[in-house]
Image (tube, rainbow, N blue to C red; front, side):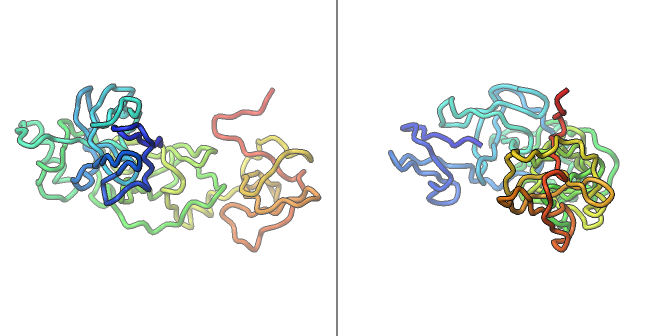
Length: 299
């Protein structure tokens, strides 16, 4: 995420310049930049924002007033932060954008109907005026309130190097709460594409592994073996601590994280999803590179 620039002198404003919650102060010119004082709004029941719509955008840990400048794609917009120079405009997705309703705006029958529907599904009162609920409620499959969340997570952090198969149940952090989800694609760069259980496909998106929790049973299922389709690790191949490899072990290849490299070329590895008691020193000929989901070996 890019740093914002001061609207007064264009100096960079890191999050550490926050003097009090929601107030960034420029160290050069003392100009104050205030985030929204409203509490974080609930998940959007719709994400059909148009050019010119007033919204709140999550930046750092605060919600900042902004305006939609361009519809980039479904659930993706270019936004302009109020009071900031145009070069700070950002491309953001639905996870960081919430509706902002101006005070005194009358509720249309369509909006009121959407609020009633939302309240009946998630079990909240219809105190909808402050929620900024957009005009359209997306399609959703029949589900219980418990399925839709939010929930209290019970799983474990995703082990480094573990490759999670499609359809694996997860608990994913969205804003400050956790929701049930299933994997669609687990990429090789530490991110996953997920579908939230009970929500429309419009809310599908990519999340960091650090924001996901997985059960011990799912870890046991996902820990291998794997295809071992990566390129062989050669004697002179650069390998560093933290690299993820595919290592030949017993009856197949398994994902492993490099713990240490030795001067003689051997590697100390930890097998993803397995206990530390199985850590071992291996020769390089047992290891292969891990390829991201959209990578391929050269012809």
